[in-house]
Length: 337
Image (cartoon, rainbow, N blue to C red):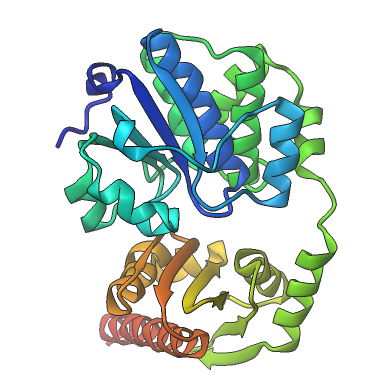
């Protein structure tokens, strides 16, 4: 397994399938769109197709329509020459496609900013991971720079949208992030349009999911920190963000159907900086392994896909978080002593 971007050129050939994660967000869709142009520029003979592994969010659909991004929900994995998974730390995030991709003979490339899951490391022929990046779009743009290429104006706009979405409208990021934003603006120069596309009004079903999450919320006070848990059948990530905005330090929201439970975890930057706890690596991965599924994510944003019951997942998540907080408190007490 190689981790060198130069290897990418050698791997690109024939038919390339570019997979976005379930309910693909703007970073996933836009990074796939940008990578498609990059792949077909590096190797003109490559035929790259974007695959929606489990649909796209309503916001992503509006962006796809505005930028005329085409994607499919059906393809033959067996006919692919290379498989590229973007913005997904595990194949569990590809829904029904996960098993087919895992069994495919074609080499796999993972491009992501989340903590790498051990299973992903074993499967990948090439890992292009940067945990310091705010978005997968930022990583893909850095590939353009690595190869001395400039994205088209429409792709530059897509990359800006992905970076803006995952950086919370440019509220977080490193010097590398804002250098990339500056260069992309020189190509497209339409930051107002980017912000406007991301400011689309939340639809009624998502608003109701958020309200239900608040109505069903349980509050856990652990070592002076507030953990909020709740359950809704859809929009778990949006509901978790809503609980954070209500005042929780950590939010865990689970739900799903047909025996599949999706759990979203969110934490404030204050919590992460104080405790140095990484939700993706320290909590989501553990939950995924324990319940026979998969989990990954960022320090303050993570997700888990498993089988089972929502209440069981929430209970176990609180147990894990509580244990980590008590370990931290004990270590602090030891230092003070």
